[in-house]
Image 1: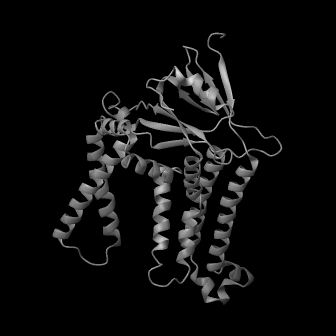
Image 2: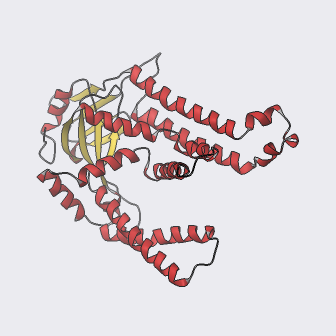
Image 3: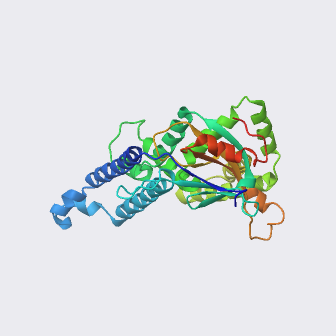
Length: 340
């Protein structure tokens, strides 16, 4: 124990930041709910019996079911962000996020809250400036806005031509948020950064991700799944007959585009584009710790490609009270050379 002491660090905590984010996300959500209920004439119908007003009779159950579902989706994302990313503390008993580094040969792990990161899987540690923290935290805040409720609310307004596309855009963003998680905007920004990177080492890392195992399987999976989903949706919503030639052209388009989309996802899973961020105070200088999140699939293909496909590189973003000691404790335990 004396040779391998456990070192504990505390995240820099700011209640003003945590409650400002909470007030922003919850306030915008409540305002959107009020606008949605006002547009649906619910307040008007409560004061009068529904049988007396045709506007009240027009509001069917599907609208309220869609509104409740949208509220649940937005509330779930807000709850995840406040609990796991911004780590909002109890004002009566504030407790900062604790990070414990255990370098004992039998354990070799870093514990962040309830999560565990194997020290042997850490490959890089980089110092990031305040601009990086502001940008990533802003991506999380934007993702926590009520996108699903906002899409329904805008549909109830009479917008001039050209602005009616806002509602489907918000709906599409809400769908992407449910598909890729609350960090979808931050992931997109990190992916763009890797595409336009100019550093030689980063270009080599990008080339290594292109050659990782399982990319062919992901290409085939995307090319097979995308045409099925899209063609089924188009057939359900069609208003006129579609010729076999048009069906074939649409199938080929979605087959190729779905395959390249699956291939692109596979490449970026081999790069540190999945953030594991903790913003417990106003954005400041922080460290970005890159580690490999290995997944062992329990399926019959676990011995071949499945585990490699689902494994990915994560980027832990955190700001601690003793950044120098934290970096020093990890310096000699990384599998690759650390760049400051």
